[in-house]
Image 1 (tube, helix red, strand yellow):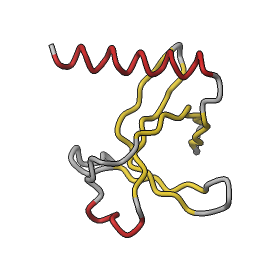
Image 2 (cartoon, helix red, strand yellow):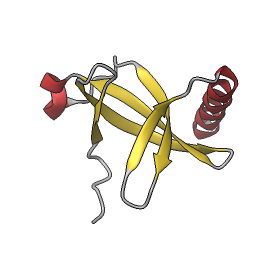
Image 3 (cartoon, rainbow, N blue to C red):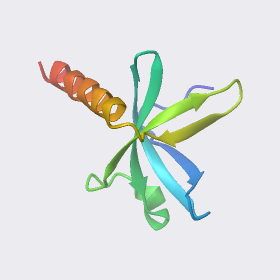
Image 4 (cartoon, one colour):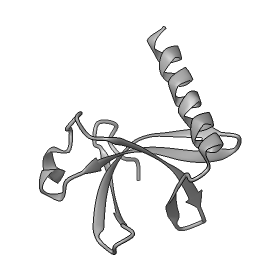
Amino acid sequence: MQQEQNAPQIIKTIGEQGEEIFMKLLEIVTVNDKDYALLSLVEEDTLPNSDNDEDEIVIMRMNKTDDDCTFEIIEDDDEFNLVAQAITDGDEMDEE
């Protein structure tokens, strides 16, 4: 089943304190054969209208298995900076 191009993909995950967190998947980038997700935090009460451009952007490493995908915080500063630079470089190429 293919998802509509304009429909945002909303992901529900569990936070460190056990709370439900909703995030909108903005983009997936691959750096050094690893996938990273650009996510925007979404308040639960705004889910139907989750197009708030004021949200903070979060970059997380994606770990995929055959039937599941998990997200991990990037704790290594060098890895985070490498991914952030790749995203910035990609954005600059899109603007040309």
